[in-house]
Amino acid sequence: MNLRATGTHYEHHAGLTFVVANVNCRGSELDSIMRDGHTRVFVEVRYRKNAQFGSAVESVTPRKQQRLLHAATLWLAQRQQSFDTTSCRFDILAITCEHYDWLPNAFGA
Image (cartoon, rainbow, N blue to C red; front, side, top):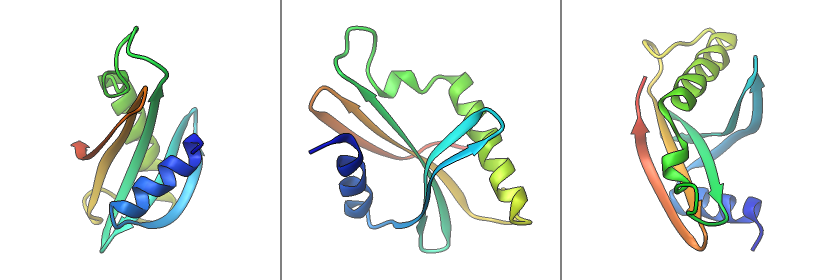
């Protein structure tokens, strides 16, 4: 199974509804935006061939989180929405070697 198919499989398994993928916002990219009921779910997909330089989860640094928060803020603003008016969460799909972790609500706004 390729990386895209794996991501799609896990998103479907998590019970999420697809909204859009690969959204570029001023130097940052949102891998997937999904819906879980009325909640917007921003999914960051991280892949590491091996854990030699850290796991996929460890690659979501505070700086990366800030970039994702900024990109999500811009995306919401384009739709006249904000974190104050829209239920949102940030999930991580972390793939290291053959190990997969879906981390719902991995960090917040």
